[in-house]
Amino acid sequence: AQSVAQPEDQVNVAEGNPLTVKCTYSVSGNPYLFWYVQYPNRGLQFLLKYITGDNLVKGSYGFEAEFNKSQTSFHLKKPSALVSDSALYFCAVRPTYGGATNKLIFGTGTLLAVQP
Amino acid sequence: DAGVTQSPTHLIKTRGQQVTLRCSPKSGHDTVSWYQQALGQGPQFIFQYYEEEERQRGNFPDRFSGHQFPNYSSELNVNALLLGDSALYLCASSQGPGFEQYFGPGTRLTVT
Image (tube, rainbow over all chains, first blue to last red):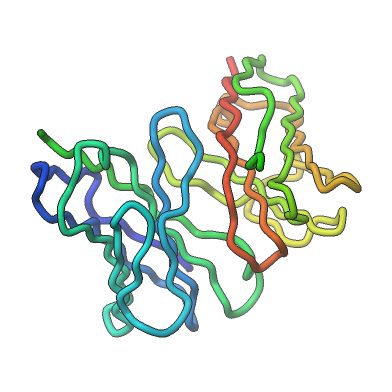
């Protein structure tokens, strides 16, 4: 079955420190990969995506993500965390093989808490 | 430029009732997808509408149905509501079925 795993329910980091939010996936073929952020009582906001090319992709608000095909991972990173980065982060995959290739498959989310 | 809008913001229904949720896509977008986000979970794909037809569907029962209008706006209908249908319902629009999806703020449905 196609799935996305975010192994950490919560990540705690001090402001100014680097952060990493982990994501691995189990999807056939070469899926498209996404990160979204959700603030309380808000919808999902797009951060970045990987389709092809350079394994390090840069996105909004200083975030970047590293794609590793052999490990089927797509970890979200930021060199220096801000308190305002505190939110719920979702990794998502769009299959490109087989049926239902237009849907997004989401992980369960990781709550990022940045302490001042 | 208005983004994706959804109405209502919140809704409370009783078990067995029916509900209709509405979505207006971002300007220039013609494809609408619906997702259900239960508390503490990631969004789950319900279905996608393009050219006024349901193009893809996730693992949801027939109680969940939808419609897309000529102006690309969409409705999600849920019949015979169950307590387990309580969730945040998210609408996402895109420029086409395979393009990047932009999400609305969601409708919070509570079934009592």
